[in-house]
Amino acid sequence: MPCPSTVSWTALITAYMDAGRAREAVAVARDAFASGMRPDSFMAARVLTACARVADLGTGEAVWRTAEREGIASSVFVATAAVDLYVKCGEMAKAREVFDRMPEKNVVAWGAMVSGYASNGHTQEALQLFFAMQAQGVRPNCRTGAGALSACTQLGAFDLAQQVVAVVDWDQLLDNPVLGTALIEMYSKFGSTAEAWFVFQQMRKRGITVWNAMVLGLSMTGHDRSVFALVGQMEKSGMKLNGMTFMSLLYSCTHAGLVQDGRRYFHNMTQLYRIAPRIEHYGCMVDLLSRAGMLKDAHRLISEMPMQANAAVWSALLGGCKIHRDAELAEHALKQLILLEPWNSGNYAMLSDIYSNSSRWKDDAKLRLHMKVIGVKEVTGYSWVDFDGKVHKFHVGDNWHPLMDQIYKKLDELGMEMETIGYKPTTDVVMFNVEDEEKEHTPVHHSEKLAIAFCLLTTRPGEAIRVIKNTRECPSAAKTSI
Image: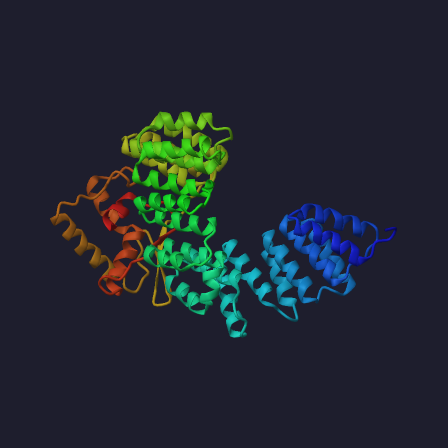
């Protein structure tokens, strides 16, 4: 074929894409454009889709500029493919620009924008578009619904998530693993395990992603025995366990303190299932060993890893050092963390706790001075709850909320009740060199406790309380709120 036509080039590009070889499809497109080929709308859309699959922003933008010059950028198919490209490359501002200019917006474009905003942490924008889509009479597809549910989960907006569920086609949900998985994840992260299990049971198509979502959901909510039982069901049903399944198993073992079980699963994963551990699996094992006080074993595992440890792995070790007050190993872990993420104040805070718990006030003061000199600022911890369609946010020592007087009064009442049954405040997690009497009062101001007290004042007896935090769980708040 001496001079291939647009149809011929497009057919070849499509063949590569159908075979799962999007990178080769992009290479063919480059050859086509280099030969002087002027794309039509169908070819441009296919090439943009191929670029989106491999996140080739450079080639994709060149194709989009060509489409604009050729006057085919207004095609709904071309513009939608361009939106998808920018979304998958994390360029949400450019995606929104193309989206806003579209004379006609189809459900695919809406879905790309909603899911893109959600996956990039722009939760409010995702939900604004989702409900704007409803107002224009466009029925959400699976991608749109999953994106909106993800945004609600990130915001901690359970009531809003229920509104999203109400407009999702239930038959579509039962047949679509993407939407079903998103719903299972949403219910699990809000602690509504029964609802997550109901969705899982009702789904007609259960691939490995759906099974893993349910296993992880049970793991996150502390149903460890159910996790192990469900994994057994997976194998009986012929489902092949993968790396994500073992992540959930290791997570359950970590939070249940099942060291030997965790080691057995890690061994079986590599030796029986021939799954190469990812750094996340090593991180779980380091966390498991560190929490159990096996700090030397955890450190040895880090040194034996086939890849360089990341910040999450060293943070797990540092967390174990904090629990078991190993200041020497903590200092080593912090040095590694400073190299990886020098501006993360949480790492310094954990070492500061260790110094304080060991009464090493001078070392603590030096650490804080060093933070000040290099400009590291502590991240403000806050908790929030979704009540009556509105998000209520609480900071440590907050005074802004209109019900704050009642909230503190409620906390005082709860504190007195707990003291009568033998509860003693946890003072060894309060930073700075302060007297024990001050320490006993300080935990009362924890953001999570303020949020819980607010919920106790505003919710009905027996109603679930869902508190979202932006920082690591505080032992003092967690132990008194369970």
